[in-house]
Amino acid sequence: MAKNEDAAYKLMCLDQVYLLTTKCEDGKKTHVIPQLWAMPVSFKPQRIAVAVAKDRFTNHLLEKTGEFVLNIPSQEMAAQVWSCAPPCQEGDKFSRAKLTPMKALKVKPPLIKECLGALECRVANKIDAGDHTIFIADVLATHKLKSGKVMVNAAVRHEFSI
Image (cartoon, rainbow, N blue to C red; front, top):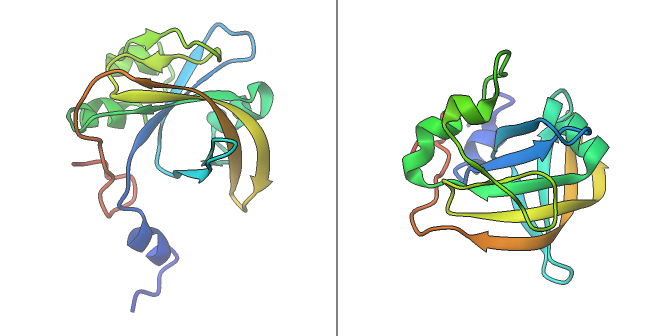
C-alpha cells in the first residue's frame, strides 16, 4: 500500500487535461495554464468546478475577474500544453506555445483556436479547499472547434502525455 501524500492523487488523476484561459483585470493581458482538476457539478444550472492552487497567478485572476474559458486540447497538442506550465517571464505563454486566441462570445478570456472545444464560464461560488480554491462556475457558452481525441494526463504528477 502506498504511504506517501501523493497516493490519492496518483490513483485518481488519469484524466482529461484542459487549458484554462483568464484575462488580467485591465483586460489587456491573457494568461493560460494547463488545468487538470476540472469536472461537471450540475446539469441545471449547467455548472463546472475547477480547483486552482492558491499560490498561482490564475487563482488571483479568478478572484478578481470571475471569468475563464476551459479549453479542450487534443492529443496532438501535448507539447503545446506542457509549454504553458512554467511561468513566463518574457513575452507570453500564447506565443511560447504557438497558440491562437479567439474572441469568446460571453466572457473576456479567449478560446484557443487549436483546441477541440471550449466552455465559457463565470464564477458563481468558491470553496476554500486547503492549498487550492474550488471555483464553481456557470457555463455560459460551449464551442466545438474541431474533431479529435482529447488529451489525458499520465499517472505521474504533471507528466503530460497521451
